[in-house]
Amino acid sequence: MTIATLTTALLVRFAEIVGEAHALTRAEDQAGYLREWRDLYVGRTPVVLRPGSTEEVSKILALANEHEIGIVPQAGNTGLVGGQIPAMRGDEIVLSVSRLNNVRSVDADGGTMIVEAGMTLSEAQAVAEKAGRLFPLSLASEGSAQIGGILATNAGGTAVLSYGNARSFCLGLEAVLADGRVWHGLRTLKKDNTGYDLRDLLIGSEGTLGVITAAALKMLPRPKEIATAIVAIESPEAALKLFRIAEETAGASLTAFEFWARRAMDFAVAHMPGTRDPLAIVHPWYALLEISSNDSGGRADAQLHALLMNASDAGLIRDGALAASMQQARDFWGLRESFSEAQKGAGGSIKHDISVPIARIPEFLERAAAVVEKVCPGARPVPFGHFGDGNLHYNVSQPEGMEKAQYLGLWGAMSDAIHTLVTSMDGSISAEHGIGQMKRDHLVRYKSPVEIEMMRAIKNAFDPKGILNPSKVLERRRPET
Image: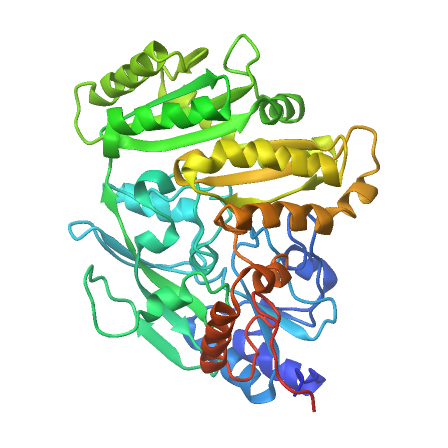
């Protein structure tokens, strides 16, 4: 059985569901839906459908399932593994949830809000702020990343250390299944132990099990104080010791511990206008620490000063800068969040979103540098990421003077080598970006046969005809006819 051909008559039926204005067929209208921002994945589609309601999503999937047409769900198109991009064959429909952007309800006292899948993360943060609450999930792409995609990929970000990833904030979901049936699971209960957790199956499934149309999300009390600092350190080993002191000193008040190599700073200052080094002297490694407090009266500042004093007494800090204002704190975070984009100015970049046990981060960085040099002598590692939860973005920029295309041709060899190292260290080849199409083959290689068969069984149960995001996460196995 293969995905069916889209006839003109069938395309008309799909367009009638959403209305002609929301069935995009012209190349100029489709362009923003068919290419991801790093230009690694480009696809084709006969039509981009932009439904305006859950009912329309239901009708689209029912029709697609009946005729076995592949559907590629897409939210803000900020994914980094190609999960939201259709195949170049041009026989799959892109279903954008961006018009589903309503706030359905807000319960400030109960600390919950129900929003639709096309709402951006920054818009959801604003809803929580208006209610006097906090939605602490934070991503560099929060102005364009949408809730449906964030949950479908179980996105992480800079606040996972204290608050958890996207899964941690979701109490319930509304989703449309492959055959068009709607699962109404928008419960706001914090405890619901009634059988299999269908919510958790859909979160992180990357649109392969259903299309998320709305979510019930937790909101938290807003911190009364936040203290932020950037410090310079000698080595990853020093970062590990600093992290332990930060945990012991601040406890649950430690809401961020980010980490990066000097090269990341160099690229940001060189290629991101308006970016500057917050410290006067060049150092090999840096960390960004944030402490949040629900108490007023300077508690966050006091904890941060105590932390830095303890670390200084231990000889771990070479230099540092404390944010003297909210704007300076935002500048510190802007620097940290610029690293991915800054690498574009340095040529080709082979990227890895990995995690290893926190205590083994220094060992990984030392071993990974040797792996990189073996695969491509002169290539420049640019490690940065969320030290506090073991998640590193181990990106590798091309050697100076090498042709970009030649370097990117080594992507497979470089990723194979890095992922093999990660797996040998009991780590994960995808910490927060997902699998998509980029890591689909590696998933099968590094997961056990039992795990893969369990995943296939779930996929077959939810989507027996294989229409949802075909060939993403898992390559579908079924006989050809």
